[in-house]
Amino acid sequence: MKQRIVLIDKDVKTQTLLESYLLEFDFISVNDHTKGVELCKTAAPDLIIIGFLSKSDEDSIAAVRKLKRDLSTNKVPIIGFYHNLDRVQLERDHKEGVEAYITKPINKEILIAKIKECMNNARAQRQYDSFKNKNHIKVENITPILVKISFLSGLKYVLPEVKNIFNNEFLISLKSKDCCMDIRDFPSISKEDAIILEKIVSIFGQKRIAVIVGKHMGPIISHSNLENRADLFMNLEDYIEFLKKPKTKTNMDSI
View 1 (cartoon, rainbow, N blue to C red):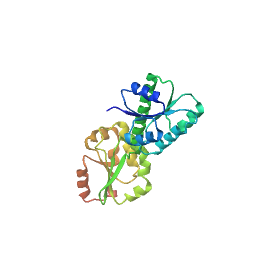
View 2 (cartoon, rainbow, N blue to C red):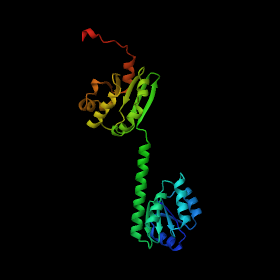
View 3 (tube, rainbow, N blue to C red):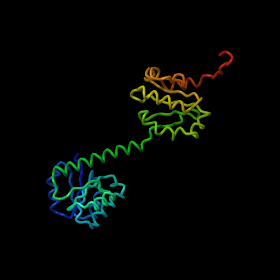
View 4 (cartoon, one colour):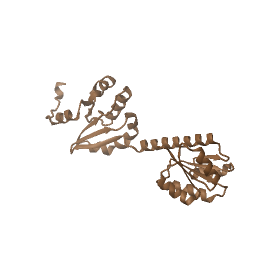
C-alpha cells in the first residue's frame, strides 16, 4: 500500500508539480485550508505538506495548530513550503508543529529525501511511544493467596518499572501470600538477565518466593546463585503442588 501525502497549498503550480514528483505515493492536494484540515482527519495521511505564502500567512499556521491539536492528526509529520527562508518564521512555525521545511523552487530529490526522513522519524517516534507506554510487568492473582508476576519484555526493560511496582505497599500486601515470578516466555536467558533477576528477587528480602523457569533452568543455575535465594520450578503446576504440601519448621538445634 502506498503511503499517503496530503498537500494543503493555494498555489496551483505547486499542486501540479508535486503530483508529477510524488508518483510513488498516494498524493492528495487541496487548495483550501479548512477543507484540507478536515480531509486530514479522515484520510489518515502519513505526511502533510502545507504551503506558506508569506510571513503573515495566518491560514497556514492556523491549519498547523488545528492538526496538532486533533488526536487523529497530531502525530502526523508536517513539512512547510516557503518562498523565502526566514529564521524567525521558521522557529515560530517549528514550535507550532512544522517538523521540516523546504524552500521554493522545489527540488525533486531533496523533497523526496525530506519526505522519507520525516516519515521514518515519525514511525520511530510512534514505536518509541508505544514501547514507552507499554507495561513490562504483569501482576495477577492466580488464587486469593497466590500472586504470579510475569515479565512481558526483556529484563533490562523491566528495571525502570521495578521501583514503581515493587514498592513498599505492594511488598506488604504479599506478606500473607505466596508469590512466584514466571520467566518461561523469554526466548533465552543471558548472564545479564540472570543478574537482573537476582536483583529483583532481592527486593523481597527474607520472603522466599518461587521462579517458574521452564527451559531456562540450566542457564539460571549456571549464570546465577538464584537457587539459593528462591525456589525454582519447571512449571506453575509443580509450584502449586508444592504449595499443597504441609510446611515443616526447621529445627534450629540440628543446624
